[in-house]
Amino acid sequence: MTVEQPTPTPLPASDLPGLVTVQPQMCPLAKLPMLRTAQPQGDMLAWAPEAPTLAYLAPAPGSTWLVGTLSTVSGPAFDAPQELADYAAGHLTWSPQGSTLAYLSLRRSDALYSINVVYPQSGAVVDLFPGDAARTDAYSSQKAILAWTNEQTLRVQVSCGLECRQTLKIDLPAGTPTLTGDPTGRDWDWWNYRLNAGPELPAQYQALVREVNWSPDGERLVYVDARRDAWVIMLDEGVQYPLATGGYLSVSETDWSSDGAYLAAQAEDWLFIFGDCP
Image (cartoon, rainbow, N blue to C red; front, side):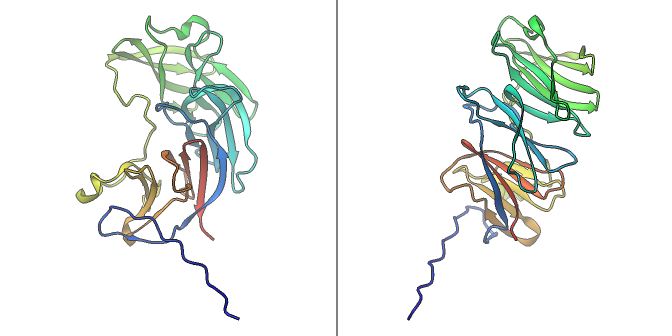
């Protein structure tokens, strides 16, 4: 009796010249529902700095495309999400030691953007712009998180007019804001998610790749092509492979864990977490 062999699935095609397309070397470890937004809202994926724990925005019952539930999930199984806070909108940013997570919120009570911090160990949530303090100009209440200076100091920007942004330093735990520098103009990429920088790619690649995101060790990079498919390149080996996100879902964000062992990707309504294949 002759046993028919399965037909090999052809690999997707890539437009990058000089690279060999190989079978994926990162395999999906988890697939979880994720909040889908119409426009960028800063980082909606954020790995903790010293642990395989990913913060992300999960959809909430009855939520809009603007807010969801701030959640975390931890490896190696990534199978037990923990909810931290409601009405989270993006700009997820861990403190340097991972004790605190800052995020952009959109308050239901007054429809104003604010910036909150949550302490995952205790579950405590603090609004850094309580009440009318969140109304930073007459037109909007947009805000963005820049970075943590240390475990107790957070740098943010707030809208101060139609084409105006003001940087603030906020000292915790008191939450005291201090103006830093002069107001600046508003950039179009204010709410884009952050990418890890790396070596400059060869000129023939630059027009064909988008949102290049290097792994922390500089050994790999992930990019999004014109079809919004995500690919991983290993430049030293001259190979590339696609990430298995379903083949028809548009990838909008990627993020490497701090040790480069895991890669998270948002593809429309889904969060995919990848690790090295067995």
